[in-house]
Length: 407
Ligand SMILES: Cc1ncc(COP(=O)(O)O)c(C=O)c1O
Image (cartoon, rainbow, N blue to C red):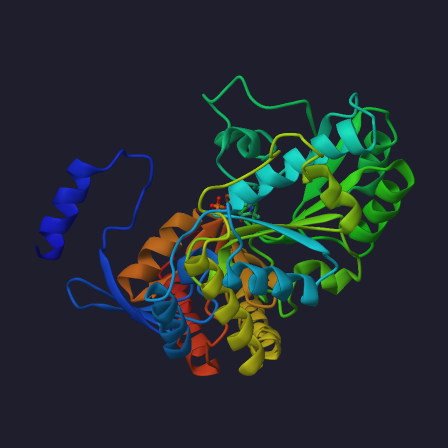
């Protein structure tokens, strides 16, 4: 089928929950993808902050292909080699002592919520501590529980009754969190080190450290949702490293598998007791596909390649370069581009009008971008992006803006 025929078939075949751009992507290499009409796009989205290694990195492709021909799935009735190595890769590089594997970011956050609830109920013997604190503007996933803790009402509409009790506080407001955390029924607080889907909002200095201190003092579980900020996206393995603060639990997905679906709950020894089976008791949490050899081989390849190719340093330097260019757009288009935000290769510019129009026009001109929140055009390119590719992307965006789009 040609591209118009494929688009017509898509129009008939899918539940219409998404609003896809009208192109059908077919292949990719590095920071470029091509659609079925042969048009090439510069990919500044990387599957929404997923493909850190770019598309079809040769070593990644070889390692995943080898695993495909070795062992794909066995369930958690047994261990498999790749999942042990992947869990060790996470614990060797982070505060975490123990890992649970699942398949997506929402599932990882579901696991973290279950861990926190059961920790308070069974390990801490405080079953009244059930309330989850989350932040306005956050995004934690689309399952019923994770949409309930997502601080953007538009994602919750029509899905009630929701999971609760939940309390939302303003992101960055330590005093507001303190007031709640010191009440007796708080189970856990969950937040992103950078609110990504909420518009690329970086935690203000001292905020994460202040929350750490409050949670330590009150026995509250501190969960960092690193689904988007983790795995090198901000120039360190995990986003919280910039603040020199560690959580009790961290959730991962997106970049962890380089494009192969995998999620993880990573926890300190103490917090991990929340999901541990008790002698003679039922398995408290599980996933059929979680920790399967194929996804874990992908994660192991991601860890190895990021290290072998020095990609954390590359993210930091490319991120600084991109950040400077985005600041340049703020100066070039005053009142139209209102702010440049972000860290590493998770960045964006706020526009005065509709960012979706900027994304659509950018795609017409050969670049893939995504929106974050109501105002921000997001750049989350592969870690291997070159300065020349950043220049190309900025030139396209400048052209879109000079046409008055997104004003
Ligand atoms: C911070 C954060 N948490 C959770 C999720 C949900 O991840 P998934 O779509 O893999 O369920 C996302 C997705 O954008 C995210 O950015």
